[in-house]
Length: 194
Image (cartoon, rainbow, N blue to C red):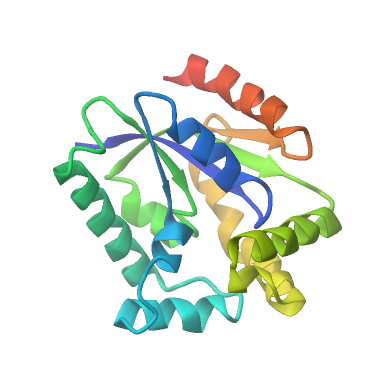
């Protein structure tokens, strides 16, 4: 069975997590942020150490542990009755992170829409990330060099996923607007795509 899915994409700081959390509160939607799964790992666990090693450099965690962690979480949430694959729409933020992950998940995800949250102002993204680092105690958002590396990694590794899904699935959303207007833009498309 393929999971009916909406993907939230964008550079770090573009608002994926904010929009995902809001969508996840709507009955029939289940939000999963892959970055949160990694940040909630125990840092003394093998996978936790892998995450710290890569995220502290602004790099993506390798595909195999990323997909494994994601699958474990989805299976657990299904067994616990929090995610109902037969009726819920999965809202993913942070996965797939690159074209190889998109290929791996192509038989698992029925992607109905991909929302590419765009923000051309790198300074605005950096400011958002630094504010989030203070507010949420996110070490991967605190260092300006790590932020630059994360933005570069997004451009090189993650942006090609947009080509994988193609223009009929990808919808560009201006994330510099007020979050409510961004949500309205997303919901207007979801109503047509589901």
